[in-house]
Length: 69
Image 1 (cartoon, rainbow, N blue to C red):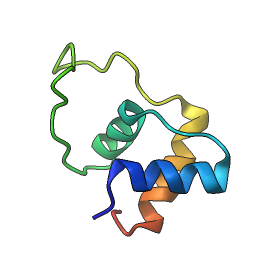
Image 2 (cartoon, rainbow, N blue to C red):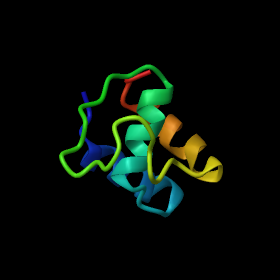
Image 3 (cartoon, one colour):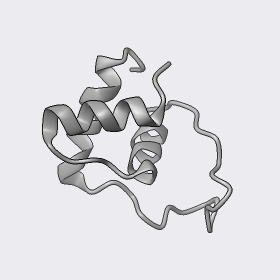
């Protein structure tokens, strides 16, 4: 299983931006991949910074690249 750093590195090399960890967690959760709650997360019900729609496809492709989905 790839780490957040692996996913960030892949997205940066292929798409030219570094996704925030909260964006990666949001995409993982929407794809049914279990994530641990972050210790600094404000609300367990709602995400403060959900992944922007224009960045979602790049993160999903990274998850496919690492065979996580």
